[in-house]
Length: 437
Image (cartoon, helix red, strand yellow):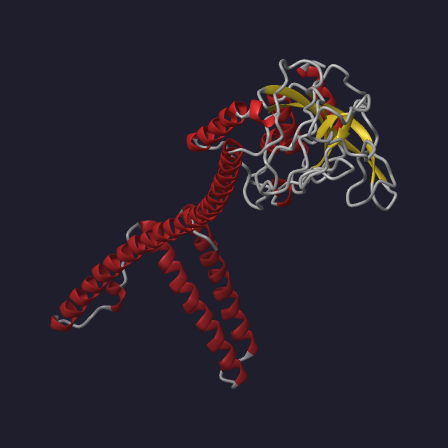
């Protein structure tokens, strides 16, 4: 399927089904771009309660390097409708020619359990990172091995064939058992898979003997009987990282030592070389475990420090905003104080001039205007108030029988006409001067 068809399938799958369609599409397309062995599909998924839902899944193979050869491990990644808020569901899908090798990371039904899935985070977790962690994990603990076709003879070999008797696993619904089988994919007969890695514990309790890697990357790895290979102990923490050069040197030295002791291993006796190889293997496992612990702790501390840095940057932005606002208010306040002091100085100067004046104050000259229009408005307002007072006192005179009714009506009519003209003049003056009211 071409990348354009991938994008079309993903767009149709996430539309009206996923809460965060854009984020889901971006995450899926990034994973498909980096791992071309995967392809998107929209299938029905059956949950533990019997309900089903159409979900987007990435079905195909991922490349895993094991003992110098690259194998394609079949997997299927299901995305819930609230991705990326919830972690995906990952399963190993063995073909009819393979069996599942159960471990701490893969159960008998093929479901994958990783610390990366358990500690899934919206901001720092994505599908490419998940696939990378799976590749690193499966390179140390292959999840599948070739199904034995014929019974291996027990004579001529000091070790039994490490084939389990469990049947091929099916992928169950999340949280459930194998009662509701997961839909299987079409087998890929041309994809190579690693052999059964063994059943050794942590650390190895038996003497490790070398097992030759496959001679090519095509076809299934050989299913010759051999002793189990030791695996590093399980650590719950951050995702795995590439080992430093010192660990690689230990692994190389261990491989060389085991190869040198192959001829002695055929005798079935334990020599100093066997003990030395076992000690080197245990030491390398111990170093790997400590490196993973140190890396996980450092990653956790870095994550906490980054979160603190983000919080501090947000607080810094808020504080800078408040400081800027306070500076603006301070500048405006200083300006108002300066204007107030200037007005206060003017008032004091006027008061001192008035107190020192010898001539009496003319009330009509005390109030002046800056333009003739304002003077006309002021005079009209003063006359209007005086006319209003005159009408009031005419009414008082009529009430006390000082004047008769005819005289009252005559003067009130004249004053009212004058008052109307004055108020009309004030309205025109306000309109001319663009004043309210």
